[in-house]
Image (cartoon, rainbow, N blue to C red; front, side, top):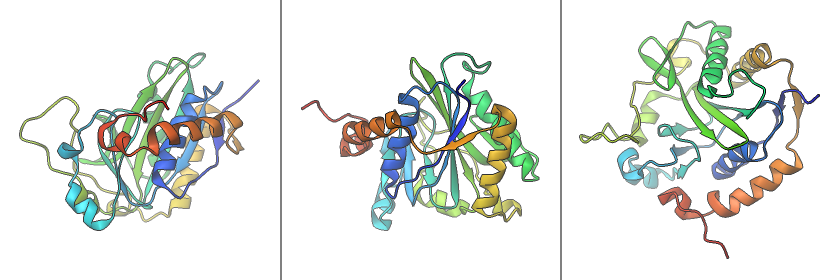
Length: 248
């Protein structure tokens, strides 16, 4: 019987990491998959969001910070090495929370933060400590499964997030980000390194999913990664407009 696993992979290019994130879902795993990863500096918008409503594009350009797009919905986030990304892929059958992936992810992140010694509460698409958001959530579904992923601010300063993301527009629209004050673990006085926080995620995941086998990417995941790099994440209009590369 195939059990839950943690895949170990990382890529230098943030767009490649986003492609692999989606590839984990597209490869239709038969059991839950966990992936813990980080990006260099970038801004990542949700699938249907408008960059001009979410991002200070001129500041990003001046600082050399790319603006990228992911396949899931949810709000715009800032990634840097002080921000840990957690991806949880659930198959489309045989799990009690298959229809509630955000609940499964919320439980995982709540348990992670508890393992680190902080009280938290689940709120609107995220996890809060006091009135500040610590984790943001987003989800993406296919016919074969569900992907839920989270950011966890380990040491990223709130000022860095505010430098690149816009304030709430005066004319709210359904796909706009739900803007909240953010604060990292470090800003809450918990000065843990990424390795310690990663270990806490693994403890929480094992308690929720069962013992995880550590593995390298499968052949199917690698093939989907290459395909998505071509059709989406290596195509500039995917990031700027949400358009896929035309078939040749």
